[in-house]
Image 1 (cartoon, each protein chain N blue to C red):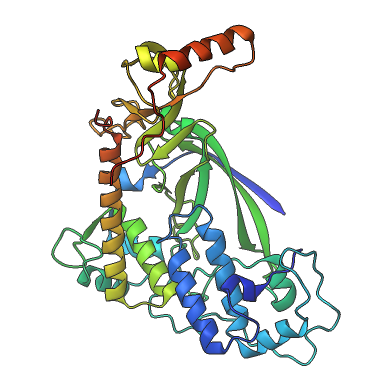
Image 2 (image 1 turned 45 degrees about the horizontal axis):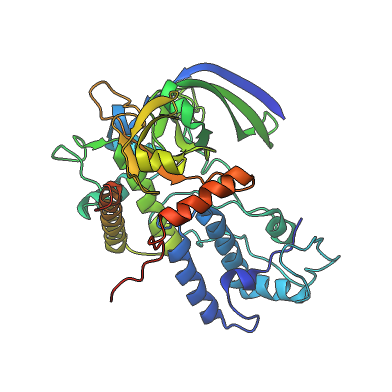
Length: 326
Length: 109
C-alpha cells in the first residue's frame, strides 16, 4: 500500500485553512470532473480529489492524518503506525450527510490507503430494506472492448463483482460472469441494456436491468474520434512527392489508397464509410482518415549518402524553415 | 467467493434502439420521478409526450441524466447550473467537431 499525500493532491500547504481546502477542492473538482474533463486520467484524479477532500475537510480525520507526520512521501510504501488513531473518533463517514437533493446513491471507491485509515465507506449495502415484493434495482457497469469488436460484433465474457447477502445475512462478494454479445456498430459511451440482469427482485418480483457502458481499449494502431477512425500512414518521401498507390490498414483489413502527388506530412486522406459501422440499417457509418507521415530512409550507406547529397544540390534553394512574415 | 455464469446474453443498445419511460429512466438512474421532472423543467431532458405518464425519453437521455446527477452531486451545483454546464459542454463538442472537419481538409497550396 502506498502513502497518499492529500495536501499535495489538493495543491495546498499543510497549514491550509479549512476554507482554503474547500476552495481548492471545488476548483480542482470542476476541472477534473470526468463529465467535464477530456483528460484520460480524469477519473483517477477526481477519485483522489474526493478522497483527499473527504479526509481534509473533516477536522477530526485531518488531525488524525496530520498526526502521522509530514515525513511521508506520496507513493511511499505505507503501513499505518500502531495506535495511530488513538483518541480520535470518526463519525459514520457519510459523505454528504445524507442531504443530497439529487439522489443517486453511488459513492466513490476509496483507495486501500484510505480504507486502512478510516475503514470502508458504507457502499450501498442494498439501500433501505423494503417490504413486500419489489422489483430489483438496475445496475451499471463499465465494459472495455476492442475496437474490432465494434466492427464485427463479438461474444465477450465479462466479470462483475457484486455484493450478495447470504442466508446468514452476511454480505459476501460474488463473482458473476456474463457472456454477452457485443453488437456491431456500438460506440464508446453507449449503453447496452441487459434485461433482468440487475439486482434480483424481492418477494418474487422481477429482477432489475443491467446497463453496460461501453468503452474501447486503446488500440496500438487506430485512434477513435466519435464514429471516425484515424490511422497514421507512413510514406517514403518519393511516394508523397510523386504520388503512389499503397496499402492502408483499416480495422477491416488493408485497402488500396491512392496518394495524390505533392502530399505533405499531416495531410489527411478520407476513406468514406470506413470508420465505425452503423448499428442499424440506414444509420450513418463513420469515416476513416489516413494521416500521412513521411519516413526518411536511413543515410547509413555510401549510396544513400550520395542520394541525399544529390538532393541537397538539386534543392539548394529549398528552405524548410521559411520565416513567416508578420 | 462464489461464482455464477450467465451465457448467451443479448442486449439492446440504449442510444440506438430504445426509448425510455419515466419509470424506466428513474430506475436506470436510481432517481426519483421528481428529479426527472426537475431536469425536464430545466430543459436538460426533452421527452416527447405531454405529461410524466406519457413521456418518452430518447436513449441518449440515460447518459445525460446520469451526467446531470453526477455534476449536481459532485460539484454541488444547482439544477440551472447543471443545465448551463451541460449546454456549454454540448457547445464545446460541436465546435470541436467543426474544428476537426476544418483541419481534415487538405491544406491550401
